[in-house]
Length: 221
Length: 243
Image (cartoon, rainbow over all chains, first blue to last red; front, top):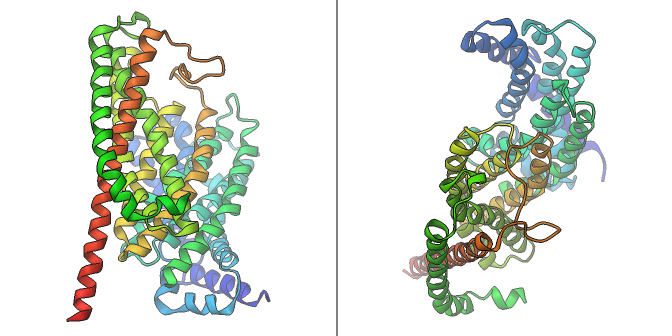
C-alpha cells in the first residue's frame, strides 16, 4: 500500500476546511461569537466570568467540532469520493483519521491557540499558565474531533445529520470535558488530570478510526 | 451455542411460554418486594425515614440500567461478528426499554435525593452523571437506528455505536469518579459481602429479581413483535415480486 491516497485525502480535507475564503478565521469567528454571547447572557460580573471562562472555552471547542464535522463525510458519500477511496485500497481507518486530523488542524488547533486571548477577556490573570491551558485545549479538542468524527461517519447518509452527530458524540465528550476542567481547576486532583486528559485523547485516537472505518463502509453500501 | 439460540423459530417457541412465565413471576416478586418495602420493613431514620422506601424501586432500576446496556453491547457484538439476526432484534428491543429503566432510576434518585441531601440533582456527583450519560447513550442509539433508511443499515450503525459506547462507559465512569460524590457507596455487592441488614436485603433482592424478569419478559415480547414484523415485510416483498 502506498501513502498516496492518504496524503490526497488529507490535502483534500485541508483544502475543504480552508476554503470558503476565510481559512482559520471562520472557526475563530465562531469561537469569538460563542464567547461574546456568554457575558451578555450570564452577566458581566468579573468573578463569575473568571470562574466560568475555562469551561466556556471547552464548550465552544466542543460546539466548533460538531459544527465543522457535520459534513466531512457526507459530501464524500454523495459525490462518490468515498467509493473511490474504498477502491484505492488504502485503509479506511487511516483515511478517516487523516481527514479528521485535517479538520482539527484548521478548526480545533487555531481555536486552542487563540484561547489565551479569550481567557483574558474572561478576566483571567495574564500568566504563562494560559499557554499551558492552550496546550490542554489543543490536546482535548483532538479527542472532540475524533469522537465527533465517529458521529459524523455514522450519520453520513442521514439528512440533517447535524443534530444526530451531537446526540451521538456528546456523551463521548464527557471524559475530556471532566479531565480538562479538572486540570484547570487548580483544586485537588488537578496535577494528575493533564495525564488523564492525554490518556483519554489517546484512547479516542486509537478507537475512533476503526469505528469511523466501519461506519464509512456502511455508508458506501 | 449461539446458533442454537439464533434460530428465530426456536426463540418463538421458547418465548411463547417463557415470556408469560417471566411476567407472572416478575410481577409476583415486584409486588412482594413493594409490599415488604413499603409497609413491612421498619423505616431507617439514618437514610431519611420513610423516603428510603423508594430504594426498592431505585436500586433495581439502577441495576437494570447497567445490565441492559451491557446486554445491548453484547448483543451488538454478537450481531456484528456472527450476523445472527436474532441478536440485532434483541439489541433493537433492549435499547428503548433500557432507556425507560434508566429514566426511572434517575427520577426515583432525584425524589430520594431532595429530602435526604436537600437537592434534586448534583452536577459533581459521579453516579448521577454516569447514569445520565447512560440515558443519552441509549437515546442516541435509538435516534441513530430510527434515522437509517434500511433495516440492515440500522443494525450495522447501531452495533458500531453500541460498541463504541461500551468502550466509553468505563472511561466516563472513571472520569466522573475523580470528582467526589455525595452518593453513598455500594452496600449490596462489596468485597466483604452485603453490608445491609437482611430485613432490607431480602426484599431488595427479590424486587431486583422481579424487575429483571419483567424486563426480560418485555424484551421477549418486543422481540416477538419485531420477528413477525420482519416476516411480514419479507412476505410482502416476495408477493410484490411475484405479482
